[in-house]
Length: 423
Image (cartoon, rainbow, N blue to C red; front, side, top):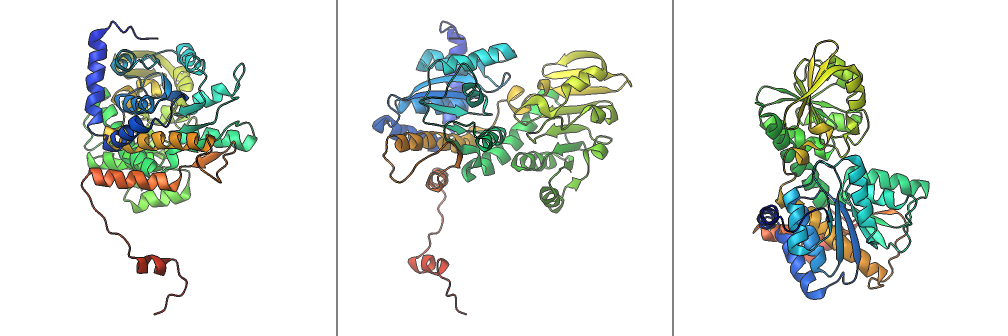
């Protein structure tokens, strides 16, 4: 264990934080109550590589309540909330291997600690757990399935499946409608703006705010920045997304042009070297650069260091680079997820749906493995979340919000499935 259970103050603070998040997670709480009675995951070893936050804690507590033997490590070196990790160890006896600010060696040693528990189901955020399990000396023998939380991880896992190296089925939780339409858009949007603000305390109003990538995460960041009074500029490589950004009211231009006028830059693409050395050299002095994609490789920090004559930490999560041309560039949170490194990540209300998807998909994998679902065979591929799970979560969320919707009549249902539509 990486947390001393005698550290009462730290663990108590974490426990209260977990309880506070639970207030905003009614769907997961309903699932936990059912899991408590039915114990659908009894005897299952479950390895989780996730951002260790208060919201995640509510998920892993739910999984343990279902009878699973859960072990947790961080999916990012800067996203761990130490008080939450300590609370999981002390109050719920869940092995938790995560320390905020851990170096690369420690990060992977924690992943290995989770793998040593011999999980038969993996739960990943970025696919580091799965990819490590597929490399020597590990073997994914006996693993019945896994889930993946984020866009970056789904991309990696689909590449593994395409190359024929993926050894067990994965459910792409990220692609559920009740996940990416809300978590990616509203969660990333709000928490990214929050992280930048906590790190810098800058005034957003009037700033030229450049968003690299207009997927659901980029859309969320852009709309929140616009709401704060920013002049938002979108940089894209996909013509359809670029067109969508234009019709959503944003300026669209190549990054080579945007770097000359931008004040704040955020990458949310999942790709490498999105902001490259040539871009840093063209930026205005005082430009603020950060990343809200899963890996810090979206910023070419190696290249930035080569063209810098000095570096210094000017305030927590803000590193100043002085370039050879005299310009100052400010990189936030070492280029890692700004919303989790400098803030608290997504609000619990959207993670309620994402983590409900996780819980129900794990239950689904176990049912398939135990032959409780007939006519379903899962091969080593990446699968979508079953539609019935997606719809159930949406219905429960609406119910928890006190919202009712209409229901189709039998006649209307029949009409929608018929080709004989007369005038």
